[in-house]
Image 1 (tube, helix red, strand yellow):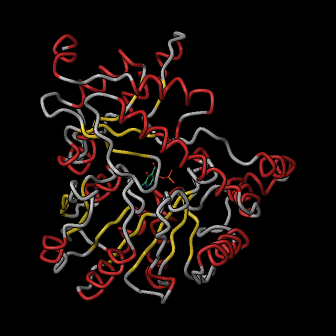
Image 2 (cartoon, rainbow, N blue to C red; image 1 turned 180 degrees about the vertical axis):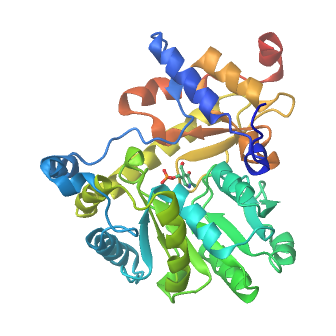
Length: 395
Ligand SMILES: Cc1ncc(COP(=O)(O)O)c(C=O)c1O
């Protein structure tokens, strides 16, 4: 008899990202040109100086072994120091900061530390699908609230004010994935106040924090350590360390004590060699800022190309690696993604993957394109034609 699998995993439907990335790999393996604007993997690699510095450490036995559950104290102290210098946020590296196996594991640890099965968790839609999967497999009740697209993916205050009371958790991604929208300081303050007054934990995912082009980089802990605010982030984009699986979680001591139980049981500790590499990276002042300027340059080129394309409407992006462009309502975005890859050699993700308000959109990740790919990819994008007559021939 076939083993019955759990309901908690059956609820989850894997996003189309994997099939699109497989298609990209397949095309590349047969020598076909394809510009991947699908998965958000930066075009650059980690800082060379940092990589060189840790190469010698490979001969040491400790390089290959478990470290302390919350990460090495020296690495946590280096990270707390960097956050303090750059953002003015005070974090006690001993009690208020963990290194994790990516922002992904930080999110699950944070969620399980504060919420029980049946609790309600609010996400703003279009959402980052892995958050939703974690909410689903944790047996929480997903409460997905669409953002206001017409005003640039802003917060729907009236609905939010009704729904926060009684919710256990609210999740924010700032800058947003898939929208690239950045919350203003005023919006953030209002959400922090609303959640605080209603005993709702606010989990802020700042994976793209260093790719914020709006100048609005407010964080609630800049002023005081708010007990109900947990923050997590990643080194997958900033230092391009995605293969090392490294991220962080900071928040109140008593919550992190609970989160560490999850970390210990699932992964024990973050990667030891990854932390050595990270410590070297954190010494390099201005390295990420330079990459961020280059991402910003890509954003501008992508917007210019999309403005020339027919049937793709650029949506304002203030940060991150993305824009979630509007596509014609008459054609399913999965079919359009297929059309784009086969006719224009551009891989993008159907917006449906990010919730129903992502329907009839495609997410383009401009932060993936290398210097060599940039000009041909943007030329291809500018020629896209999704207007009715062109499409009727295509479908
Ligand atoms: C918003 C967001 N959070 C988390 C992650 C995952 O980060 P990590 O690689 O650190 O697990 C991603 C990856 O794309 C992301 O976009």
